[in-house]
Length: 300
Picture (cartoon, rainbow, N blue to C red):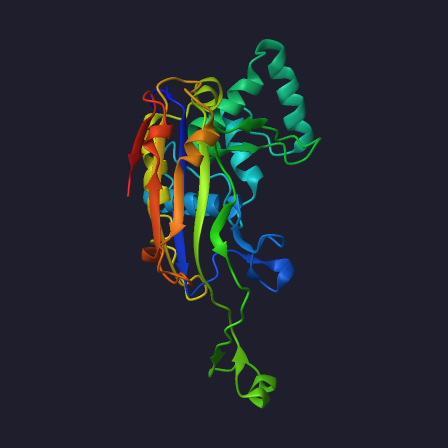
């Protein structure tokens, strides 16, 4: 899959949502997620990673080295089994698998490493985000745990959002009971600009997963386009507006990540009281606060 990356990275993603709900909260009637203290909107890291996985799966179509481990309605053990087949264990019974692994370890003490490496080599999302492949404590199919080099935090809105229901109705009905109501509530909408921050560890890429320069380029591509082929009426118009990348000169970095994140300021324009579009904001990078050894690149 190529040489692992040699430089540490941090990045900032700005994306906006117009007339949509980017990440509903099932515990709150699927309303947009909100920090109850600040009123700021939230989008979980899991949601963003799902978009990236979906894009990679669509572009690569499960080509060698670019499989996706975390898939909807696909048992994880189906992929785990492929790793065991790669070391010559084709048993299907759990008890026989355990016996075969125990026997193999007597002659090959690196069995666990080979299983982990197979998963990293063949699944892009494991190579990128890591994975817990010990789905059951005493399961026969155990491919270990991998800490991925790429981590993304929760996205947080720039301004507080109001959890407002904009009720829409449908004319088409499904049941006789619906016919008595004449119409049915369907969804909720909002308008928000979000900011997410991420980290990429070259040290973990080199020591654990082998996350390469090609993988990195695919990640940037996936982040930029993660909403472009995922449109729906519920999510409205979502678009990545900025991807700001900080590239350190060495594996362990040149300065703390918070200094780089603090250098990116997003503010409402002076004449805007209620922002309703991306153009109502200004994005400024305070380059004087960034060490000369850190390269800054605006990819959008």
